[in-house]
Length: 202
Image (cartoon, rainbow, N blue to C red; front, side):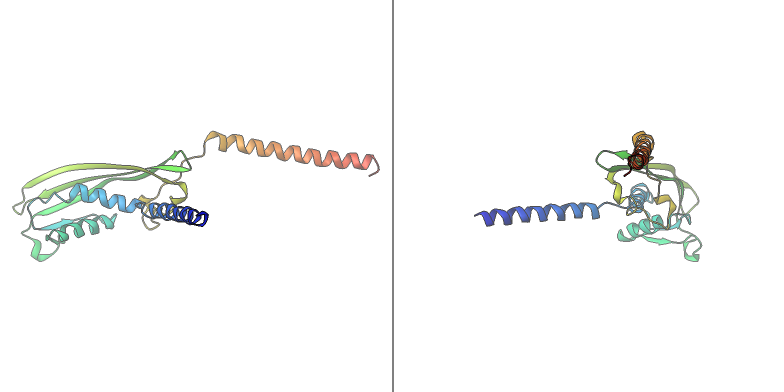
């Protein structure tokens, strides 16, 4: 019976570790957050257009890839704006107005993460009429472990990176002061005891 209880306890501990690891690995990267927001903003903009041109900026190319993947999964056909076959097609243009990641301190050695994306877009009909001209801005906030900050960033794309929050006043001022004072006391005691031993003939 005791052995059975030990096995149950061990299995429960393993399950907890696996669950925690899965949760950590499942944390979306900042790049993935941007992709989610771009798809939420623009995927429905072409409305009923099944074939159209896409004019996307060179910056953040993964947004274009995520959007094209979404549209293609819906059976739509997307052309580059310079394609000869696309001259008589509707046209979707978008620009990136804001792309930013920020971190703030959160309890339990965690960071409060905020990812912001703002896009300006215009959808023009094949006859040149502007059908939609608008802007969308989305903010996604969650928390992650401080140790996972670098893992959710992508070195190739600066917009996915942000500096960690500054240390609080305790860590910035009090801890260095305590360390300095302790070092000074240690040095003082070392030389005082050494001097006493020398004076006492030790």
